[in-house]
Image (cartoon, rainbow, N blue to C red):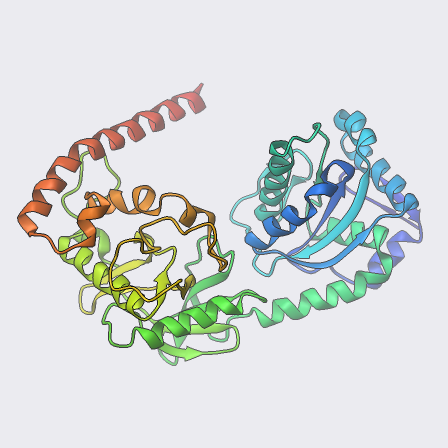
Length: 409
């Protein structure tokens, strides 16, 4: 009996289906990327892209002449419209990767893999091709991606049959280690590239469990360190439990949108109260005096509980700075992180963190947030900022209307 791909009709060599069935069902989150000749020079960048999106490489190998020929034929059958390009850009390397938290919120359509059971796979493929294109590639395929876990097993069985069982077993162990240790009431995760966030039942009370992906334990350590250093700060959320790959913090009601005022016309949200800005200044300065920087701190990390007050809930990028500082000037929460900083830094933190994220919540120039200034002066400045913020909101509303009109046509 021969293996036959249900999507493309491609038939593998005799006995191929037996090798797939021998390793039983595929593991959720498994994916395979085949790097073509035009993408070989960007392998290091591809690995970085995969890591940023939450993937881990479980197996990597070069393809011999037989595997290159069989894989090229398969891809050409699956994509006859791109057969010429695939023929001129043969597959050269296999990356078998695993994502312990597949993004199943929607099924996207990709030009290389069709519908996917993990939106991150197509996102990674798009980022890889974009990187190669920007690097001046001659327009080759660069990389192909499996459509789902079933196809990933088929590709792995075809290109590295001796590694299938070990890869699947490792993926299963990783999935087991990522399970939440308490009953889950709701999934609150957003991107989940480093950790998933869930509302849980913690011994009869509601709490938040943050479970980190394998290999991202350093982010967990920073969260714990932030609580140790900020024990005297009422704004720092409290830990209830710390495990090998998870931490549990108190649950807080989020009423922050109710206290954002004034709100510019047509804008999505209002401005932070002045007392919140003052407390943020105190928190950032507290950590700087201890030699740490609140990298990637954003308004999305703030909660306001009517009974417990302001809370900061995310310290994954809290890291030692170059020196102890007693000033807010140059802090890494509101200023771009220098290029020579060697720690973990999300790309957005190296650009304009204050103007891209904070100005729309403070309504103040950055310099006016660095010092204690009279509140009447700050209130007057914020009233002037309502004009550009209103225009920005009006522009957003207009573009949304144009997009809806375009979809209607």
